[in-house]
Length: 342
DNA sequence: GACGCGTGGAT
DNA sequence: TATCCAAGCGT
Image (cartoon, rainbow, N blue to C red; front, side):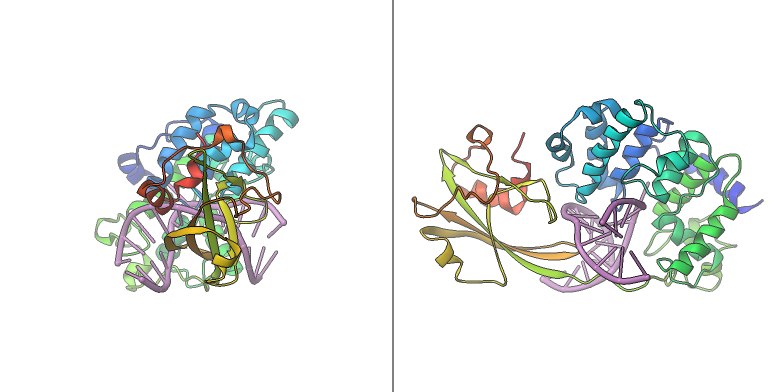
């Protein structure tokens, strides 16, 4: 039995029961693929469900404004995904007469849809024989076929794509793609793969050569940038003002208290922010591409120019009210100030 | 092709 | 605690 048939037999018994698995609605599959881009199932699942509930079809999404969409995305990360979804939904309504694309070539024209998502939607929804190569597929194929080229290099990606194109089922391309993903997610995992329970234990190149802990090879890391964020809280009418973060930076379009960014950890912040009652909390938060050092302050009195004119402040009616208690600390600890807007 | 983009779980 | 990294894509 060939690779594809064996894989599909395994999938028929072991496929995961996920909310979008029994759907061939391209809108639903599209949303799912975007939500779970670089994101674990456990982390994205509640967001996917809430998003589909709030925006059940492409028309509903297109009718939303950016704040509404971002609100459903808050806490998930990679916020340009949400903005691209909205942009593309409007594109579908305005340019495609409200009808979702019906092919790989049409799908990939959507902003935020690349080769992987286009192939996934096309194979699952339209039965197109196109291999969807993501991190899972890279790993499974690199190990099974013994690809020793770095999978994130151009050469390595072409090799993997070629192997996937050869292996894909002509009859069940969508199931094939999802089966490889389930295999990579549950059996052929990045660390300590479950080789003894793998159907390919006797034919996997990496297993035969004891290289399953080494493959797939990857090239270098991205560098991390340090930044220092000093948040200054001033309680006004039992609420705190938030601003919308500007374009071209982290947390774009989300809300935050008054921010003073410094070059390093600076004690002069007390010179900038006069009449500070106390430093509420000091912490650092590590992102994958930036290391943010966050410090929180509480300002009292009128000497601190809280309502600056350098950015858009939110109206008083939208303020979340809370007393100056430890709850603020917990609010910041959990970064929930991003979710103040209900 | 290189770089930027977010969060939370695992080790 | 520090590091890695998980269903990619846009610029």
